[in-house]
Image 1 (tube, rainbow, N blue to C red):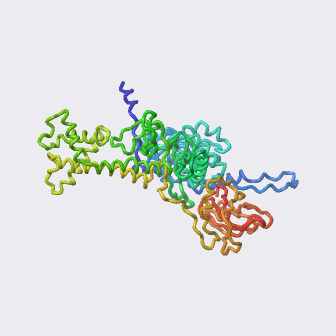
Image 2 (image 1 turned 30 degrees about the vertical axis):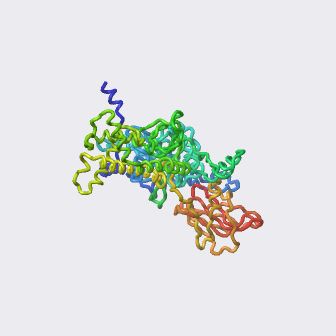
Length: 619
């Protein structure tokens, strides 16, 4: 029986590691990795990559063979590692942003585990059920095997659980189904150091993300998760408004003036990811950015987020803002009882939801409460006293209400005011009543805390009504101005426009850029989108641009050749722009990420203008 009761007790979340604990665990980490310095590991990785990419040796008979084609180095296999302190930061961010982590639960997965540093750090920082690393290079697998043996023999600080660590050799791109099909549904904490990942690797990350369980956490470094997987409840607003307007105007017999436009919900993966946090990250080669995502099912809410709820069929079907509790339960924002209620439908809170909620609260809730607050408190108090006296004729016959009778009076007043009864409501009203008495007792005599005359009751009740209206008004202000649910943009905030950059031949792009922002772009330099026309004489057009990763210089040759000088490569890589008859390319600029703007024309028949393209993902 005792064992059964113990099994029913939920586990306690694992707290943040203290400074003393962190120091002790870092000591174990350093001891296990002694002799495996980052530079030495990187050199082994580079040597194996060169061997894999080297052309085949010439035949022994000495016959001439044609020169092998030039190959592009597989930068995706470039070695990069995170420090122990960064993995500790990742674990704490998940606890802070995504919810508690429990002992013996969840699988940690490192996507490209190198020599195993991330995996060992994770095992020392949290008691996962299991820690898994996947690495393609044999030289790094050999180090992982040695690390795994040391870990098995290591003596950990007292009380520290030793999770199982498993290192798997393989290419997570070409061998995804074999390596990850069974691990993905169990992976609750994934790290992808995607700084040098190309499109195939990022597609593998996206495939893994689709198979991970609800509530899982995913870190990516440098590159973001594929847009289609990330929840955006305000996605493509102009397109949705255009379609909604076209649909509304297509109805026969409907006047265009004053017609209500109902936008369809934005298209999102029903099992999508929310970007919970991003921050700069200092690595051995410079500064980059890490991104933390959490996986959700529709309506993409955490407990306490604002959503839009529709009542049960037998109840009021008005869609109202509420605090999310579960898939079928909410707490309505204006409910003083804070009671959880079952509803028939819950929808995410988007910009359109905000507008509706503000109008509903302004018209249906706040105005009504303000009118009630301004109503005659004398009549309401008299009616409440009369209601109580139907059951207790002696109640306050001397014209005074004792402090011990205030609870009964408040119950009667709230019934007349339309506030639902309940213990929580009584507590809220009682608190407001006490505050109102304290405000009126300016001389500190205590007279307002004892027996009250009927006139005094009217004054206090008037203040309580005002406080109730103030509570609802604060909810309205929350809907108007604060970040709630999934909507991160405040009302009236417009998308940031690109400003002109002096000396780079770029001008402000304005709304033309925003109109094409939602269109998919191929990750190659031939996917150019004309933005606007400019004069041919563009002074100061840039011939070189430094990408924000701090490791790549981009050069432009007028004939349309992009030269990419990468610090990890001995020779520039070439990428061709469209080279029709009369093509001229004058300058370029990189505002950040993989996005590049170019000045020029693709052919003699086209106009000079500013063009946009996306560089390969590994840049």
